Amino acid sequence: MCGVLGLVSNEPVNQLLYDGLQMLQHRGQDAAGIVTAEGSMFHMHKGKGMVREVFRTRNMRDLIGHSGIAHVRYPTAGNAGSSAEAQPFYVSSPFGIVLAHNGNLTNTAELYENVCHKHLRHINTSSDSEVLLNVFAHELRHEVSKNSDKVLSTDNVFTAVKAVHELVRGAYGVVAMIAGYGMVAFRDPYGIRPLVLGSKTDENGFKSYAVASESVAFNALEYDLERDIEPGEAVFISFDGQFFSRQCSASQLKPCLFEYVYFARPDSVIDEVSVYQARLDMGVSLAEKIKRELPVDDIDVIMPIPDTSRPSAMELAMHLNKPYREGLIKNRYIGRTFIMPGQATRKKSVRQKLSPMETEFKGKSVLLVDDSIVRGTTSREIVEMVRASGARKVYIASAAPEVRFPNVYGIDMPTREELIANGRTPVEIAQEISADGIVFQDLNDLEAVVKALNPKIEGFDSSCFNGIYLTGDIDEAYLQRLSEGKTGCGGLKVMPSKMEHSITISSSDEE
Figure 1 (spheres, one colour):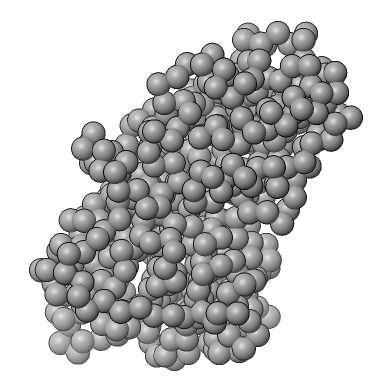
Figure 2: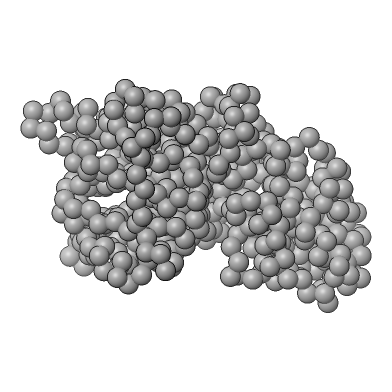
């Protein structure tokens, strides 16, 4: 996952963008970047690391302007170790465009061939986001070239976005700025990746606008959530505050189900669904299944595996009429293991990240509640810790169904070989992680929980649970290439064969 943020205001936005990125830090810890617009000039600073590590006071002073976009990166496709992969990306033609992208494209290789060999544009990295930027830039240039005065119009912007929808497949929530004109934001036709619109009106009546991956970013900025940007919709906000929107493609609202399970913060509202309420309701439906499949009378206490599963665990405990306890204490200065590259790193970090309180486990039969079980590494380590702390029995309940398939839309679970549920039954999974029993949420129940909170949702991207890919372009050959060429999450790395003139740009101070 990544997080994007964009602002058009009548006040300096550098501090606002920084504060908003801090609220989106959970969506990516690999790199961060901010670009501000001052007239027709862009000011950029980006680099590897978390927001607080990338930006220093001197960097913030240079980010001048009343409009800007920002990004926190979690490797989706490209080279996770390269600072050149940090976003936003920039192209000089037409006008100058910067772009930040959350999601993952599934036809990057095809787009790369068109962009580089047909349109003679240069791609400097292996990131699908830079390819997306160049597709948009080419289409925008094509539209503007039809104007006798070569001045950009809102129709040009929306027509270019329409062309992007026709050419690009995959998941994307995008914010971009066009030098001298304004900010554009758009979302893929299925709305797989979230994108929300906020605003604030000052005492003089000027209306500032914000676009973000999650509504929680608006809390720190004191902006109000207006609505979600619709699937296939584009909005354009001129630097003087004029707002325009247009539906640029046929669309269906089918958001990523995993956002509600794990990625989004509980205090966010996505597609009119409170993430917190959704997680509470997941606990209710999971409790009903536990009654059918586990010896409830044998369970002494229910505990969450912090932090995401806490709402589900609390509601589950109440419905099972069992004590709820916090037996695993999280070290908040350790990064999230799910988005750490490398299996060995994830395994080592589990014991650094979670510390068991022996008094809560000794002699008890414990039901541990997790949001999901992906690779099983964390679950196995936790079960071992809990047993070593004196637990009599250890059961596991997952608020999500078994993750059996790769995700190609921007989540770091790309290969079947890494998934503990691949080719295993729940009984076999329990044996693999040394648990006395395990229960997974049913997919139908999970989808029903979220849809009940917003009946306008037509379906979901549930591909990691059911193997059904909305974009219709994922076959066995694609998944095999993904397994062989994994470099991040959900995407095939583009390794251009003709990049003799590639350059490396270091944008962050090393200190």
